[in-house]
Image 1 (cartoon, one colour):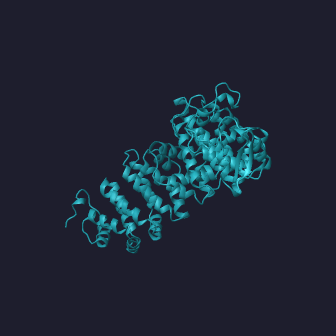
Image 2 (spheres, helix red, strand yellow):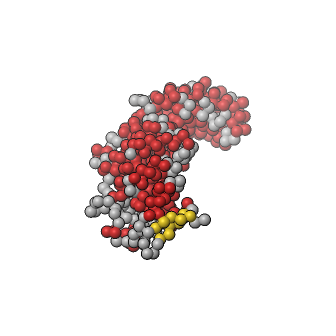
Image 3 (cartoon, one colour):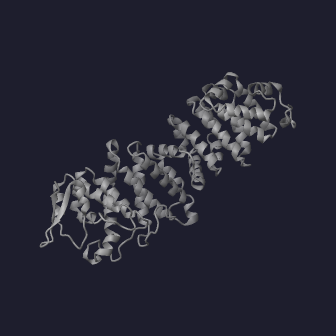
Length: 476
């Protein structure tokens, strides 16, 4: 059968014959489709490697690109991508036959035209090759860093963002030198554009999370990246930018998924506290929030995600326990206890007990939760800080906050799971601390507020009907 797909330009026989022989087809388009299908399996990739097909496909791709035949070029690139997926012989051949330079030339010519499929497949090729190890990663890095990566990062497409993150992460995963370059003056703009793209179009794979986890949580570059993302703030007259919100929400999700499995840097801990402190200073606490995170307000969302990050940092045990102590020394407990005391009571208490019967701070107009779950997040952090830390238990007692925390053991319309987190906090406040247990037992119960969650640590409150005094007794 005559190959009509090449009627516009001729190709050398030394390129066509190996492909025709391997595919048992005399039509180039059909031959490429057959080989693409065959190369999906490890056996097929190994067979084609034994036939030395990859150098032929690289030469073919060069000719197709020079002669502007994008449909066949896409097929040839797909075949290269498949051949380089886990087959070391093909991955080595790709480097040896200047495959990185070829892909760079092809991508640079299509960036402005936004031929998304060619850019996506080209990046997937580089990603598969990078997975082969250091030599392959360095070859890709030297060709594309920084300008090639920067140009691709500006393409606002999920299909290009995911493989780009794969390439950058795998290159830096085991190389301090490349990581330092990425987080330096030339590389930081790449990260900024990656985060902006992911903010605009999202991401479909975990490579972005792996990259941000390494740079922001495990290493000491969070402050730098967060500050570089603030340039759009002036334009929208906000203190924080939507891209900063996206970064914090992603880091919060990473940390929540990897509690006790991820190494946290001291820089990340300190920077998050600084951001939290700053957000508290700019949020309007007299406007009740009507939604969960994200709310659409950058300031409120930064506050909320900062709290969830601090909550999960304080939930870590073992070596990471020092981070909780660091946060406490920075003043996170005093900051949040003071804020909690200024909030209006939970909805259950507001409905059943007159506000005047309780001491909720000195403000005439109590603050309200700026988003649903705000009170719960504060209580969760306090509870995590009090876990097996007697000095925290004593500090809370000395500052007369025990009763305030007992009042959090109720349901609240604006704070799902407040009762459970309140129970956790009270448990940690009383466990192993006889003085705190004595204080609770001597508290005068006001109104009809009850704290049955104390039963979770084997205690219950009994109230003398005459004296209205409470005491803690062992349930056993």
